[in-house]
Length: 387
Ligand SMILES: Cc1cc2nc3c(=O)[nH]c(=O)nc-3n(C[C@H](O)[C@H](O)[C@H](O)COP(=O)(O)OP(=O)(O)OC[C@H]3O[C@@H](n4cnc5c(N)ncnc54)[C@H](O)[C@@H]3O)c2cc1C
Image 1: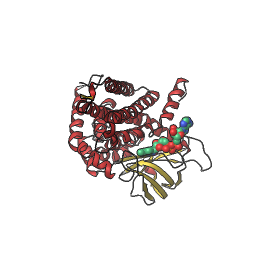
Image 2: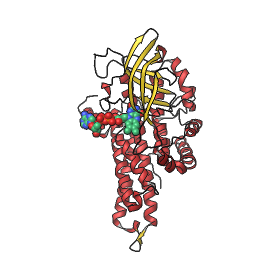
Image 3: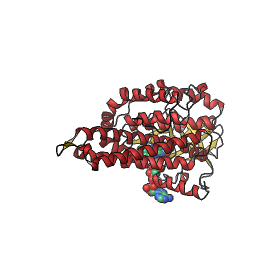
Image 4: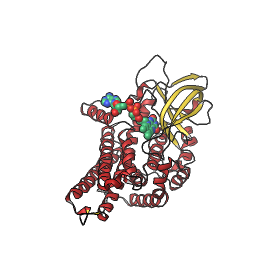
């Protein structure tokens, strides 16, 4: 059975096969143990870099694969179906820091960072959220003050995916005066490296799911960032971050679809094996209807996602479609994994079987890179012609 409604190009089929084989050999066998131990596997970064999966949408001049968005999302779905933690590492790195430097960086910044990021020598992270600025990210308080040829940064960033392993972090900080709270204006984006004095890695979160993906707090204590590391215009960093999140949300949708697909595949197999009342439970209509609804919601989510990706690659603005794709895919992932646990019965509730992990991993897709409520706000605003 083919999982994709949209026709795959030769390149997409090759990338899908490569990602599927890599995930089956190098990720899936370890996913449960990495989850249990909250273990981040550093060799994964090296291997993903060798495959070209950490520079998927970067042009070849920066040693990227130079593929389109749809091809990138196909690879991401395959990785996510094996392990959602591995997928978020790849999604954040490809969608946010690399794309921000590519789109808004100077030639010198691109030369300095992008090749190393594509090779996996520098893992990227994105630091926007703060303890008091989550959904309302423009309320961020990290302050950047220009002092000669450096910017001095002070503040705290929360929830930074890859934050304790990253070699380059895109940090959004306020560049206007501390008392001039002007929403998204007056915020700069800085390319920060962990060797800078004043860069401190704080607590690592003990999470419900996505446990093999480290999520940490970062604090900046009079951290001096060279002026050469400011990205573009010092007042436009929030705009850059929001534009990048339009891409990022497509990645999270692909991650959610991968989780949901894995839950469906495990459910189909289990329902064929598990016998009750003298029959395999797949013979019961109550189970068949669940499986049919799971497959339908996944196919719908994937079709919307790839339509949004194609529109993006045509150069169209996809803000609302990106939000719709993430909203639909993440709610599908949560719903599908809930059905999967139900189909497994008591065995769905224990760690011995994989759907318990998929259920926990699915939840975060409704929260990060904008909660479902925030996606609905973005979509509703677009209905009234507001950005
Ligand atoms: C595992 C994980 C990894 C993450 N990785 C990163 C990362 O790499 N970089 C980064 O910058 N951030 C990251 N985040 C942060 C994430 O983006 C935020 O958690 C998210 O934006 C929500 O912010 P919050 O947690 O402060 O919730 P809040 O904003 O406090 O929201 C609480 C609740 O209120 C609702 N709400 C808020 N405002 C409204 C409104 N106007 N209308 C209706 N409902 C509303 C929300 O939807 C939510 O249900 C990560 C988070 C997690 C859990």
